[in-house]
Image (tube, rainbow, N blue to C red):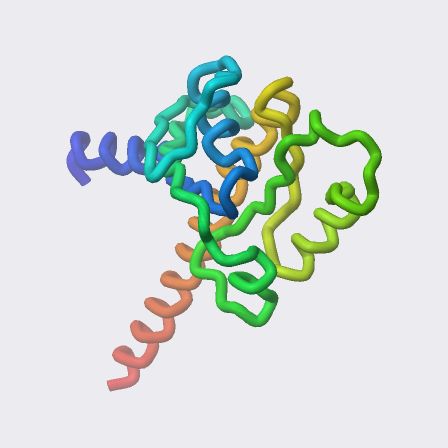
Length: 173
């Protein structure tokens, strides 16, 4: 492999792509914007589509997260994902706006309920955060990197197994 191609491959491995999806007004733009800019914008407006690129160090390695902040109006998470749905990409369920919790059990999602929903839909994990307080934001994006790396490793192992099977089949001819 040429040195230039090797460097490009290493650079590609450092990029992690993340689509931020969910219902309207749940805080998608706030967590994306706050994490990328480093401060909370009280006057943040609803978005149709925005892209943010931010560096993040995980386990001593530098990664670049490319976040795609999508518009709301996406079908309820329970209807869109389930354990029976074949996940093509990792899913991280994020509980947002935890700074607004006041103990109202009728209208708030508890941590336990979030963890259970993540299990029910087959998500990789459940993480909570507050864009306003910046509590848990870094952890959200660390989990994005962990899940992406785990997915890449799983995908690579599947290709290796397939290649080995085909190679063995051809060797028999």
